[in-house]
Length: 288
Image (cartoon, rainbow, N blue to C red; front, side, top):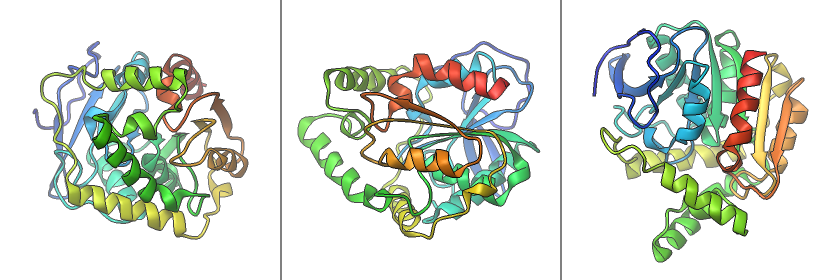
C-alpha cells in the first residue's frame, strides 16, 4: 500500500492493478484507489452493503476511467480503512464528505450503488455545493418500500450461498433466469481479477453496523428529494429484490429532471449485468 495523495498525470492502469493509497481523515487512515485522467471533477464511488474495494465491478470502474478521474474508497471501518463503522447512513455520509475534503476537492460527482446510493443522497441533501452530478443505482429513498426488509433477505441468501458454495451476490444481485445466472457468474469472476494487494474482508462488526444503518434508513421519514437540484441519473434492474425496483421509479419521480434507466430481466446488480450499455450512458451523462 502506498500513502499520500498523488495528483499524478494520467496512467492508463486498470482497476485490477492500480495501487491502493491511504489518506489521513481526522486521524484515521482511509484507503482508496484511483485511476483515469487526473483532471476535471472526480467521480467518487460509494459501494454496497458488505463491500470493500475489491467489490467494485472492474468493468464499470475501468469503463468510467477511460474518460474520467475515478476514486473508489473504503469508508470508516470498512476493509482496510481504520475506525468504527457508523450505524446510521448520516454518519457514513459525514465520513465520506470528510474523505473527499481530505483529498482536497471542492466539488465531486457521486456514483452510489445500493447502500452507497443512500449515502450519496444524504451527502447531496446536506452538502449540496459539494456535488456536481449524481448517479444512483440499485438504490432507493429513505423510508422506501421494502428497504427495512433488506437485512433478513440478505441473511437468508447468505445462508443459501453457504449451503450451495456460492457467493451470496449470486442470489442477491441477479435474477434466476438463464440470462441472470450467466451474468452472475461473469460478475463474480470479474471480482477475482485482482490478484495482488487485495483489500481486507469486511469485519462482522462493520457489517452489523451497516445492517443496522440500512434498517434505520428504511424506517425513517421520507426526505424532500425535490431539494436535489443537480443532474441525476438513476438506474436499476426491473426485478431488484434487495431494494425493490419501485423505489427506483420513486426516486426518478421525486428528484427534479432525473434520467431513468431500467434494465429488463435484471436485478439489484442490473448495472453490472448491463455494464456495456450502462458505462456509455453514465459517461454521456457526466460529460453533458
